[in-house]
Image 1 (cartoon, rainbow, N blue to C red):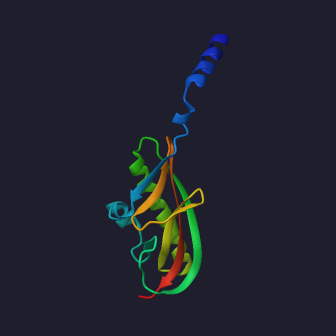
Image 2 (tube, helix red, strand yellow; image 1 turned 90 degrees about the vertical axis):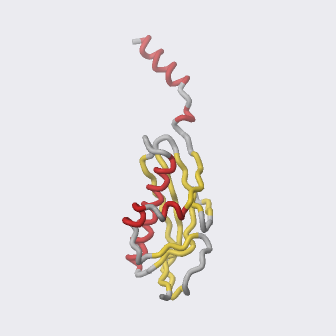
Image 3 (spheres, rainbow, N blue to C red; image 1 turned 90 degrees about the horizontal axis):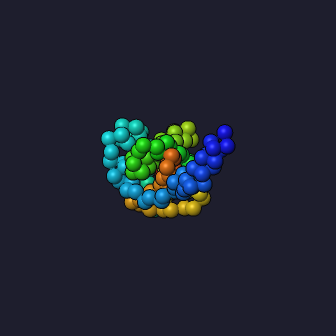
Length: 146
C-alpha cells in the first residue's frame, strides 16, 4: 500500500501541470470559417453578422448588446477545428437572440474573451486548451434598413 502511495505521489509530482492548463490564444480567419459548408448550413441567412467596424445598412432599431461565452470539447481535435466549432456555437446563440428580439442583424461583433475586447473585421479570438476551446463574443442586435 505504501509503495502504491509513493508511486502515485511520484507521478503527480513529476507530471507537468502545464499540460493540463494549456490556454493557447489563436486569432483565426472569420471569412474562412463563414465560408465553410457547416457554417452555411447551420446559420440563418436572414440574420446577418457585421464584425468589428464593418459597414452595414442604417440601423432602424437597436435591441441592445448581448454576449455569449461558449466552450467545446477540444479533446482529440485540432485547435483550428475546435475553434471553428465553438465560434459556430456562439454565432448561433447570437442569431437566436436576434430572432427573439426581432432583429435582423448583429453588428459590432467582437471577441470578448475574459472580458477583454478584440475587434476585427477579419479575425476572431479563440483560446484552446488540452480539453476545452472557448470563444466569447459580444455584439449589438439591431434591425437594419433593407
